Image 1 (cartoon, rainbow, N blue to C red):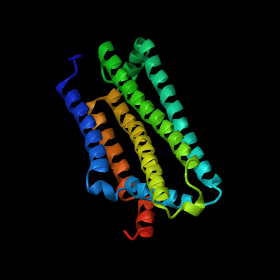
Image 2 (cartoon, rainbow, N blue to C red):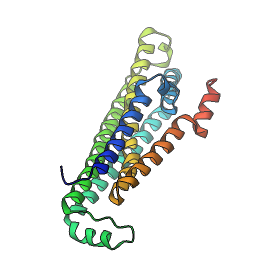
Image 3 (cartoon, one colour):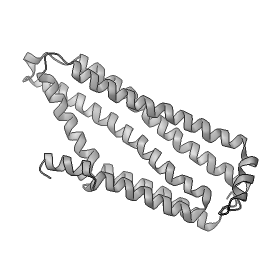
Length: 230
């Protein structure tokens, strides 16, 4: 089992369990409906309904363009991070000698180090696929904006159905983007494993606390809650 200690496997299990449990809570439970992400999904539907009322929809296309640009930035960053992680595999001996010389350095075998680095690369690869798919979905949203009925048909059943389809598509794009960002956040927690299993547990707990606070107790969440009456 790659010569990892029992504590290493426990720490890795805590990391994976925290990530999975947080994702399930945020996306599949009643509690998740109170999160900042879920509340922003509701505004996506409002956006699409308001879009129907506008004769000129340059603002809407600019919004989609900005969302695409942000997603493309994170997708590119994911590729750079993957390259950086794989580069570490080529310098394993040098890195291990540096880590061993540190005051808090923990003895690590070559196999253990490479397994940890590959795990980090897998996390960034997962993030890349999420960001790339979100970018593609925002492309589809742009197409739906172009196919939207004219403003004088905004009250028709067809127009409202089109707005709902566009809203669902923006929600899907936002959901995949959020999953990619979540992978970035937990990748920071994963870095703690390079310093030892106890550090991994601590950094995982810290990342979980920060992300939980942002979704359920942040100033941004309170602002949205006030707008929509809690």
